[in-house]
Image 1 (cartoon, rainbow, N blue to C red):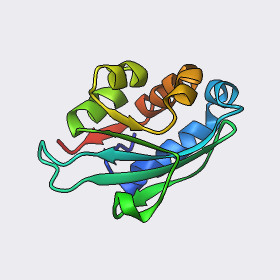
Image 2 (image 1 turned 180 degrees about the horizontal axis):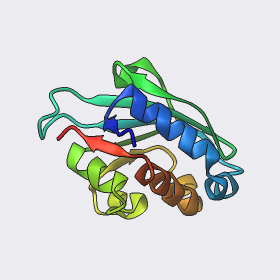
Image 3 (image 1 turned 90 degrees about the vertical axis):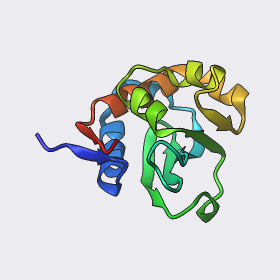
Image 4 (image 1 turned 90 degrees about the horizontal axis):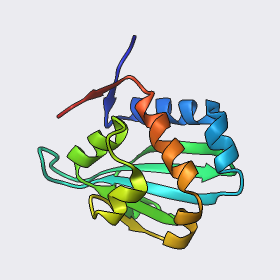
Length: 137
């Protein structure tokens, strides 16, 4: 089975495909409207921040790709943390909401809205954990 390097354009495309197949996510996020920047902070062997754009709309991922910087696109939400925490998140060892509460990730945007969609957030992570991933660090 092919493994996708994280982070990479190939990984984020695989994530989009997998997310669009996830019926549990589709149901949990059927009323969600909002796009994200997923940012891997510099440090831990990462020289400059790595930015993914993910457009989530009514239970589907309309688009997902890497960006050159956080300034390249304005989004409703920004989810940011160090590589080691992203790795734990993708491996299913961290819950995204608890990770924000424990300050392992920073979340910018309407926190109340995010808290109304905790099942959808959980499914976003479960979907990521299904992708055969090769971590660069």
